[in-house]
Length: 70
Image (cartoon, rainbow, N blue to C red; front, top):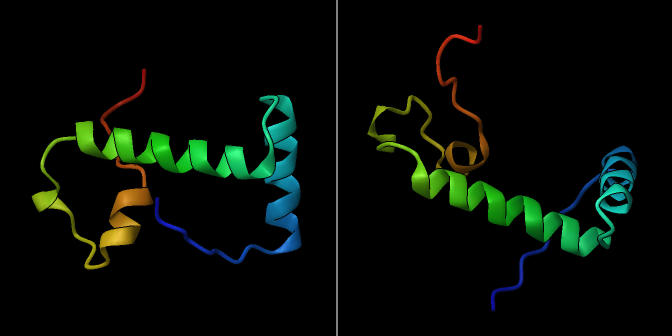
């Protein structure tokens, strides 16, 4: 298991805590769930070779437009 430390401001913590409470999770569990879901989505996405961003982490955690919403 890898340990990752992130810094979030009070407003972000408040939002994450509210979301965690809604999902019946702790703050730590909520953050782990967000990262896990992002990694799954990233691994299921088409090749990232078309990405215009030079920062791999921004690429991983950024949403891509998937087309028109109707």
